Length: 219
Image 1 (cartoon, rainbow, N blue to C red):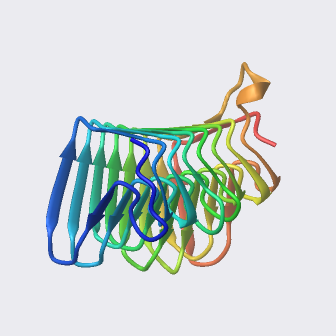
Image 2 (image 1 turned 60 degrees about the horizontal axis):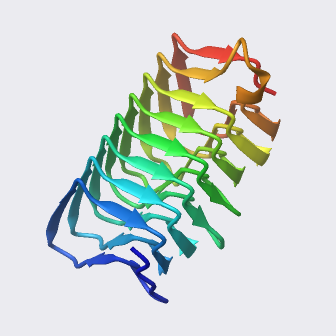
Protein backbone atom coordinates (compact mmCIF):
# COMPACT_ATOMS: atom_id res chain seq x y z
CA UNK A 1 0.00 0.00 0.00
CA UNK A 2 1.11 3.55 -0.78
CA UNK A 3 4.19 2.55 -2.77
CA UNK A 4 5.31 5.61 -4.70
CA UNK A 5 7.75 5.49 -7.58
CA UNK A 6 8.72 7.98 -10.26
CA UNK A 7 10.02 5.19 -12.51
CA UNK A 8 8.69 1.64 -12.94
CA UNK A 9 6.49 -0.39 -10.61
CA UNK A 10 5.24 1.50 -7.56
CA UNK A 11 5.11 -1.68 -5.47
CA UNK A 12 6.92 -4.45 -7.42
CA UNK A 13 9.52 -4.46 -10.21
CA UNK A 14 10.23 -7.80 -11.93
CA UNK A 15 13.50 -8.13 -13.86
CA UNK A 16 14.11 -9.88 -17.18
CA UNK A 17 14.21 -13.71 -17.17
CA UNK A 18 12.55 -14.03 -13.75
CA UNK A 19 9.27 -15.71 -12.83
CA UNK A 20 6.83 -14.24 -10.31
CA UNK A 21 3.55 -15.61 -8.96
CA UNK A 22 1.43 -13.27 -6.85
CA UNK A 23 -1.51 -14.78 -4.93
CA UNK A 24 -4.10 -13.42 -2.47
CA UNK A 25 -2.51 -9.97 -2.42
CA UNK A 26 -3.80 -6.41 -2.20
CA UNK A 27 -2.37 -3.40 -4.01
CA UNK A 28 -3.84 -0.06 -2.89
CA UNK A 29 -2.82 3.53 -3.80
CA UNK A 30 0.50 2.71 -5.42
CA UNK A 31 1.90 4.92 -8.18
CA UNK A 32 4.68 5.07 -10.76
CA UNK A 33 5.41 6.30 -14.27
CA UNK A 34 4.99 2.79 -15.74
CA UNK A 35 2.93 0.23 -13.81
CA UNK A 36 1.36 1.91 -10.80
CA UNK A 37 1.58 -1.29 -8.74
CA UNK A 38 3.62 -3.80 -10.83
CA UNK A 39 6.13 -3.57 -13.66
CA UNK A 40 7.33 -6.76 -15.42
CA UNK A 41 10.12 -6.68 -18.00
CA UNK A 42 10.15 -8.46 -21.34
CA UNK A 43 11.57 -11.92 -20.64
CA UNK A 44 9.85 -12.36 -17.29
CA UNK A 45 6.80 -14.56 -16.60
CA UNK A 46 4.11 -13.02 -14.38
CA UNK A 47 1.07 -14.77 -12.86
CA UNK A 48 -1.42 -12.91 -10.65
CA UNK A 49 -4.17 -14.90 -8.89
CA UNK A 50 -7.04 -13.89 -6.56
CA UNK A 51 -5.59 -10.44 -5.95
CA UNK A 52 -7.08 -6.94 -5.85
CA UNK A 53 -5.86 -3.65 -7.30
CA UNK A 54 -7.53 -0.47 -5.99
CA UNK A 55 -6.80 3.13 -6.95
CA UNK A 56 -3.31 2.60 -8.32
CA UNK A 57 -2.03 5.16 -10.81
CA UNK A 58 0.55 5.66 -13.53
CA UNK A 59 1.54 8.73 -15.50
CA UNK A 60 2.50 6.79 -18.62
CA UNK A 61 1.25 3.20 -19.12
CA UNK A 62 -0.57 0.67 -16.96
CA UNK A 63 -2.42 2.23 -14.04
CA UNK A 64 -2.08 -1.00 -12.04
CA UNK A 65 0.20 -3.26 -14.13
CA UNK A 66 2.66 -2.69 -16.97
CA UNK A 67 3.80 -5.98 -18.47
CA UNK A 68 6.13 -6.82 -21.32
CA UNK A 69 6.25 -10.32 -19.79
CA UNK A 70 4.15 -13.38 -20.58
CA UNK A 71 1.27 -12.59 -18.27
CA UNK A 72 -1.65 -14.46 -16.65
CA UNK A 73 -4.44 -12.97 -14.53
CA UNK A 74 -6.95 -15.23 -12.73
CA UNK A 75 -9.85 -14.25 -10.45
CA UNK A 76 -8.63 -10.71 -9.81
CA UNK A 77 -10.35 -7.40 -9.18
CA UNK A 78 -9.21 -4.11 -10.71
CA UNK A 79 -11.10 -1.08 -9.46
CA UNK A 80 -10.49 2.65 -9.69
CA UNK A 81 -7.06 2.39 -11.28
CA UNK A 82 -6.06 5.18 -13.63
CA UNK A 83 -3.51 6.22 -16.18
CA UNK A 84 -3.13 9.93 -16.71
CA UNK A 85 -0.76 10.08 -19.67
CA UNK A 86 -0.90 7.22 -22.15
CA UNK A 87 -2.39 3.71 -22.37
CA UNK A 88 -4.12 1.13 -20.16
CA UNK A 89 -6.16 2.35 -17.20
CA UNK A 90 -5.62 -0.91 -15.31
CA UNK A 91 -3.31 -3.04 -17.51
CA UNK A 92 -0.91 -2.36 -20.35
CA UNK A 93 0.38 -5.50 -22.06
CA UNK A 94 3.16 -5.84 -24.60
CA UNK A 95 3.28 -9.64 -24.67
CA UNK A 96 1.08 -12.75 -24.59
CA UNK A 97 -1.67 -12.36 -21.98
CA UNK A 98 -4.48 -14.51 -20.53
CA UNK A 99 -7.21 -13.01 -18.33
CA UNK A 100 -9.91 -15.21 -16.77
CA UNK A 101 -12.76 -14.73 -14.28
CA UNK A 102 -11.69 -11.20 -13.39
CA UNK A 103 -13.56 -7.95 -12.80
CA UNK A 104 -12.67 -4.48 -14.04
CA UNK A 105 -14.67 -1.62 -12.48
CA UNK A 106 -14.25 2.12 -13.01
CA UNK A 107 -10.73 2.10 -14.37
CA UNK A 108 -9.75 4.98 -16.64
CA UNK A 109 -7.16 6.52 -18.92
CA UNK A 110 -6.92 9.79 -20.79
CA UNK A 111 -5.85 7.85 -23.90
CA UNK A 112 -6.65 4.26 -25.00
CA UNK A 113 -7.94 1.19 -23.17
CA UNK A 114 -9.81 2.15 -20.02
CA UNK A 115 -9.26 -1.29 -18.49
CA UNK A 116 -6.73 -3.04 -20.79
CA UNK A 117 -4.58 -2.10 -23.73
CA UNK A 118 -2.91 -4.86 -25.78
CA UNK A 119 -0.22 -3.29 -27.95
CA UNK A 120 1.85 -6.01 -29.63
CA UNK A 121 1.42 -8.69 -32.28
CA UNK A 122 1.05 -11.50 -29.74
CA UNK A 123 -2.05 -13.30 -28.39
CA UNK A 124 -4.57 -12.28 -25.75
CA UNK A 125 -7.39 -14.39 -24.30
CA UNK A 126 -10.09 -12.81 -22.14
CA UNK A 127 -12.79 -15.11 -20.74
CA UNK A 128 -15.54 -14.97 -18.12
CA UNK A 129 -14.68 -11.37 -17.19
CA UNK A 130 -16.86 -8.37 -16.40
CA UNK A 131 -16.10 -4.79 -17.44
CA UNK A 132 -18.15 -2.05 -15.77
CA UNK A 133 -17.89 1.71 -16.09
CA UNK A 134 -14.38 1.88 -17.48
CA UNK A 135 -13.52 4.94 -19.57
CA UNK A 136 -11.02 6.14 -22.17
CA UNK A 137 -10.61 8.28 -25.26
CA UNK A 138 -10.73 5.10 -27.41
CA UNK A 139 -11.74 1.65 -26.23
CA UNK A 140 -13.62 2.35 -23.01
CA UNK A 141 -12.76 -1.10 -21.66
CA UNK A 142 -10.41 -2.75 -24.20
CA UNK A 143 -8.04 -1.44 -26.86
CA UNK A 144 -6.15 -3.69 -29.28
CA UNK A 145 -3.49 -2.42 -31.66
CA UNK A 146 -0.22 -3.45 -33.36
CA UNK A 147 -1.76 -6.65 -34.74
CA UNK A 148 -2.53 -9.00 -31.81
CA UNK A 149 -4.69 -12.12 -32.10
CA UNK A 150 -7.44 -11.79 -29.51
CA UNK A 151 -10.26 -14.04 -28.26
CA UNK A 152 -13.00 -12.75 -25.96
CA UNK A 153 -15.51 -15.28 -24.61
CA UNK A 154 -18.35 -15.21 -22.05
CA UNK A 155 -17.69 -11.63 -20.97
CA UNK A 156 -20.03 -8.81 -19.99
CA UNK A 157 -19.48 -5.14 -20.85
CA UNK A 158 -21.73 -2.52 -19.20
CA UNK A 159 -21.59 1.27 -18.78
CA UNK A 160 -18.18 1.62 -20.41
CA UNK A 161 -17.54 4.87 -22.27
CA UNK A 162 -15.20 6.32 -24.88
CA UNK A 163 -15.14 9.96 -25.92
CA UNK A 164 -14.35 8.97 -29.53
CA UNK A 165 -14.50 5.31 -30.70
CA UNK A 166 -15.52 2.03 -29.10
CA UNK A 167 -17.46 2.47 -25.89
CA UNK A 168 -16.52 -1.05 -24.78
CA UNK A 169 -13.94 -2.25 -27.35
CA UNK A 170 -11.75 -0.62 -29.99
CA UNK A 171 -9.95 -2.95 -32.40
CA UNK A 172 -7.38 -0.93 -34.27
CA UNK A 173 -5.46 -3.67 -36.08
CA UNK A 174 -5.98 -6.98 -34.29
CA UNK A 175 -7.50 -10.26 -35.39
CA UNK A 176 -10.36 -10.42 -32.91
CA UNK A 177 -12.92 -13.16 -32.19
CA UNK A 178 -15.75 -12.43 -29.74
CA UNK A 179 -18.20 -15.15 -28.63
CA UNK A 180 -21.03 -15.50 -26.09
CA UNK A 181 -20.55 -11.95 -24.85
CA UNK A 182 -23.08 -9.32 -23.76
CA UNK A 183 -22.82 -5.58 -24.34
CA UNK A 184 -25.23 -3.37 -22.38
CA UNK A 185 -28.60 -4.18 -20.85
CA UNK A 186 -32.14 -4.45 -22.17
CA UNK A 187 -33.66 -3.28 -18.89
CA UNK A 188 -31.38 -0.56 -17.55
CA UNK A 189 -30.32 2.36 -19.74
CA UNK A 190 -27.56 3.31 -17.28
CA UNK A 191 -25.72 0.11 -18.25
CA UNK A 192 -25.39 1.08 -21.92
CA UNK A 193 -21.90 1.32 -23.39
CA UNK A 194 -21.43 4.71 -25.05
CA UNK A 195 -19.13 6.41 -27.55
CA UNK A 196 -19.25 9.04 -30.27
CA UNK A 197 -18.80 6.18 -32.77
CA UNK A 198 -19.36 2.50 -32.06
CA UNK A 199 -21.22 2.57 -28.75
CA UNK A 200 -20.22 -1.02 -28.04
CA UNK A 201 -17.48 -1.92 -30.56
CA UNK A 202 -15.39 0.05 -33.05
CA UNK A 203 -13.42 -1.95 -35.64
CA UNK A 204 -10.72 -0.64 -37.94
CA UNK A 205 -8.48 -2.89 -40.05
CA UNK A 206 -7.59 -6.58 -39.84
CA UNK A 207 -10.48 -8.94 -38.86
CA UNK A 208 -13.39 -9.08 -36.44
CA UNK A 209 -15.62 -12.15 -35.99
CA UNK A 210 -18.56 -12.19 -33.55
CA UNK A 211 -20.78 -15.16 -32.68
CA UNK A 212 -23.67 -15.50 -30.19
CA UNK A 213 -23.24 -12.00 -28.80
CA UNK A 214 -25.93 -9.66 -27.45
CA UNK A 215 -26.03 -5.88 -28.00
CA UNK A 216 -28.60 -4.24 -25.75
CA UNK A 217 -29.26 -0.50 -25.56
CA UNK A 218 -25.79 0.74 -26.45
CA UNK A 219 -25.43 4.18 -27.97
